[in-house]
Length: 55
Image (tube, rainbow, N blue to C red; front, side, top):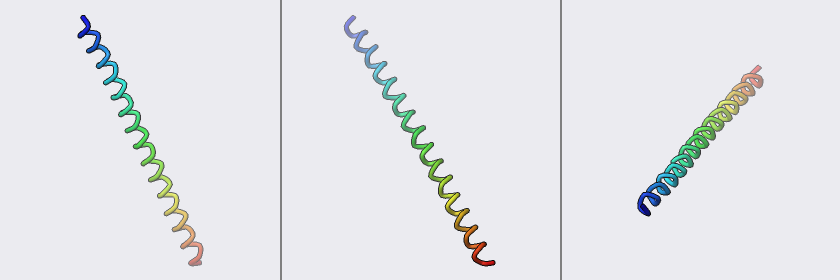
């Protein structure tokens, strides 16, 4: 019976670790999306500045 309890705890720990990995992956993807959006805005402002200076 002690073995069953140990296995139940291992499952709970692995589920927690799995949830943590999923959370970290979502956080990483969100960070990449924000970085890409920021990079796009930088390029847009840079292009707009070049166009305005050309006139």
